[in-house]
Image (tube, rainbow, N blue to C red; front, side):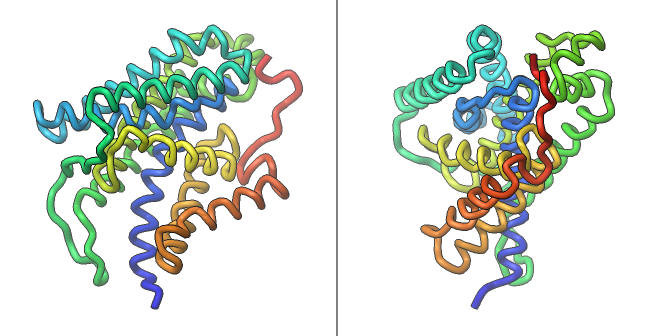
Amino acid sequence: MVDVFSILLNGALISAVYALIAIGFALIFGVGNVLNLAHGALLMIGAYAFLYTSSLLTPFGGLVAAIVVAAVVSTAIYYGIVRYIEENMTSVFLVTMMLALILEEIMIFQFSNEPTILEPIVSGSAIIFGNRVRYNQMFAFVVSWIALVAVWYYVTETQRGRAILALSMSERGAKFTGVNIGRVKVETWLIAGGLAGLGGVFLGSTIQTSPTMWLNPLVIAFIIVVVGGLGSIKGSIVGAYLIGYLETIAIEIGGPEMRSIGALLVLIGILLFMPEGLYGRELLEGAGE
């Protein structure tokens, strides 16, 4: 018998983390039309930064360190490499993939290839509608939504945030209004990296942490932003909940091996009938030039 409450609870918890991961991916694409394949590796960096620092500090201190480290690495990737090749989508695609693989090898060398579960930030659990839910999962849900609301507010209500929105619409138009294009792109990579680090800690503490943990979240983030609309924050949140609940239902009915079936079917349907995504927009001629 399908446990409806289990689906509602687990779907809500994992979808919030998926949204956190996908928004950073969407922001970078929206601002620079860049598919950052190193985004998944930033989750891994965040998880391992937490693993290392939480033993030296506290779990909360480790969480802050993970966000900072992932944000710094993300900014370094853009400032040190991507900004020189961002006009060539193929080069960015290949370089960011190679960077992800290099970071994976570094983590294997430093921490080994054995998977581990991160220490929970908040210990304990509660029974909700007959389902045991760990406090750490609820903490991840709440903090993810705080981060999502903060990003939404920053982009829509602040001057610096609206510069990100302006650049995502048209680089030419943003230049005409006095937007510092370079600064906005660096800020976007910084924000995306911080969100990835936060998401990596939550995934690493609820599922597992390993040097190869970056690939599946990267695929999920890509599916979510395609479904929601490339570059759309609202679309990323809606897409995350759609994919999160489809995964949860598939696992509840068919087991873990059926996890990705629903998401892939939705992706195919979107590509066939709504290639711009649920909340996507058609690029204006000349946008991004």
